Structure formats: structure tokens, C-alpha cells
Image (cartoon, rainbow, N blue to C red):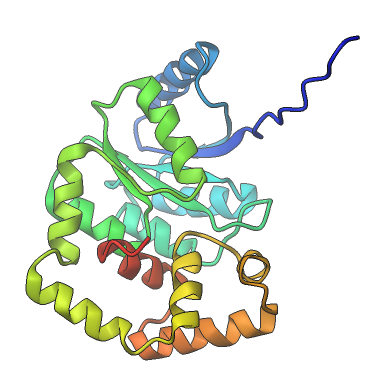
Length: 237
């Protein structure tokens, strides 16, 4: 008797590619297509852009899962990828999750890495990455993980506080939160939507909203993007 394979195939990760060099965008698409053909996670390119304003427009229109984002772009207020991330605050994917940003840049300067992570990017890799590793990084970011080229991870830890005094400060900040608020904070920082948090913790969506508002107030943050950067920098997610 024949058996049926019930293993679900993950949906393709919908990707927007943002870089001001057309030949580079063409090369990335070709390399990732080849990597996928060899068995890597599946991505679907749904748009691309060469400057800040075009990037914001296509991201808002296509609502991709992941944006591959160069950090140095023309347009906007002159802050490149940071302007794109800020211009897309609150944009969600077709499935209702937050759009996630993975910086892909030739730059490995600490100030570039820190700037885009503070703005809300989920990861930062350099253009020396292999196609197979890049397609895996895209899948991981889509799933809510943080991804960095090995040397760059140190910049993030240094910038967001690995010193003993800063860890003590983190403990003091966490002490302001109730146990439930900490649970909600970690799930929100991992990219969960309010409905998903409610289901995970067996509470109502309204209760989740109340907890999030309380967390933002107590930590003196203004958005879930800032909350994510705060939690990532303190290695709480």
C-alpha cells in the first residue's frame, strides 16, 4: 500500500533586493537561483530597487518577508539603508509578520553595522558571503533569527553592552518588568505578532497589547523595532 508524504514544504521566502548597482542585483539573483537549485531554501524575488525612495515604495507595495538591503544608497535623508528601514516601520508581510531586513553590504565598518541594527535590521552580512550561506541566512531571518557575519557579531555585542556594568544595567531594567511582561517582550522581539503571542501564552490579544504598552513605557522605548534592537543587544532573544 502506497504511503503519502505529509511533510509540509516551507513556502518560498518572498524577497526584495535593494542595491544601487544593477549588475550586482542581477548577480545576486543568479547566484541565489543556482544555490536554490542545489537544494538550498527557496526564495522568490518579488521586487528590487536602487535608491531609498524606490525601496520604500516597493517594500510597501509587495510586503516581502525579507529585504536584502545595501546600507549605502542614494536618496532619502542621506542615511541609506537606515532611511529605508525607518520608512517601512509598521509594514507587515502578506502573512502578517513584520517585514525583516538583512543588510548585505561591502562595508564591514562598525558604524554601518550598528546603525542599521539600531534602526531595526535583523542581521548584517558582507558581500563576501557565499550564495549558499546567503540563501540560508535569508531563510533564518525570515524565521525570526538574527544573522551576522562572524566578525561583525562582535561589533553588535560591544555596541549593545557586553561589559559587566552594562549587564548590571540590563538586570535593573528587567527588574522593572513583571514575569509576564518579560515573556511578552521576548516573543515580540522575536517577531511574533500579537495574535501569535496570545496563542503562545494563552492570553487575549487585548492583554498582549496592554503588556506591550507597559513594556515600552517602562523601558522608555517608542516602537517594537526599538524593543527588538534593545532585546537583541542584550542577548535576551
